[in-house]
Amino acid sequence: MTTDYTPMWQELGLDLAGHDALLNVLGSAYTDIYLSQKNRPEGMGYFDFVMSEVHGLRIKELLDEKAAGRKIIGSYCVFVPEEIVLAANATLVGLCSGADFAMEKVEQLLPRNTCSLIKSSFGFKIGKVCPYLESADMIVGENTCDGKKKAGVIPFSGIM
Image (cartoon, rainbow, N blue to C red; front, side, top):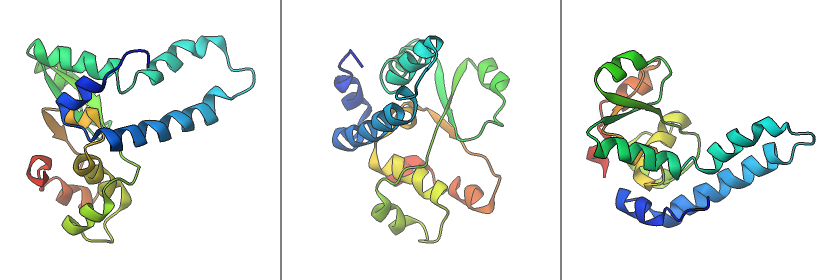
């Protein structure tokens, strides 16, 4: 990232130290796995740029949309119909989970044997490390398992 997005992340209420830790892990993993590939096609340059700005320029774009009156809908599932979100003059953004953040706090709220995907989702919120999650006006969670159905009952806004 060439721009300092720290003020934007502060405004979102991110834990800057935790967010930096996440970016360091993501950045090194991307570099080690993809950028180090021999004979990497030059055409991947645009994708590499997008990935380098995934927590910067893209978040700024979402916040600009919010400032223009659009709502941001976060989703953990690809089965959320984007057409409905667009018809509501909103923007759909995929949320992720899969890293352990704030697990000790998460396990105070959820049973220890809850699946790691659900615990990771809560950890991202409790740990305040995901600018996409913090930018979302609403979160749509899928109900593909009993744990995810129950996780949707606890509003993220109520755990912070």
